[in-house]
Amino acid sequence: MKPPEPPADGRAEVRIVAASPETARRVAEVLRHCFAATEQRSYPAGSEGGTRLHLTVDTTHTPRLARPWLAASRSSDQDRTQTDEV
Image (cartoon, rainbow, N blue to C red; front, side, top):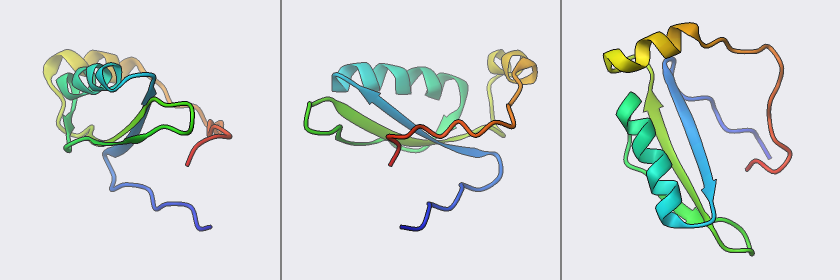
C-alpha cells in the first residue's frame, strides 16, 4: 500500500481518535479556533467503538493568539509515526 501524499505546504492533516463523537468534536473546535480548517469527516474508530475524526488545518492563516505558540514550537527530525496509524 502506497503512503498518502502529504498535504500542500502550510497545511496539516489532523486525525483525532476519541471514545465519543462529542469529545472528538470538542478537540476539533479548539483546532478551528487556532487555524482555518476544512469541514471535519468522522468515521468509526475500530471494533471497540469510538470515533475517528479527520480535518485539514491551514497553518498559514492563524489568529494572532496562536502565533506566539507556533513561533515557539519546534518540530523534531524524529519520525513520530504511530504503529496503528492508517
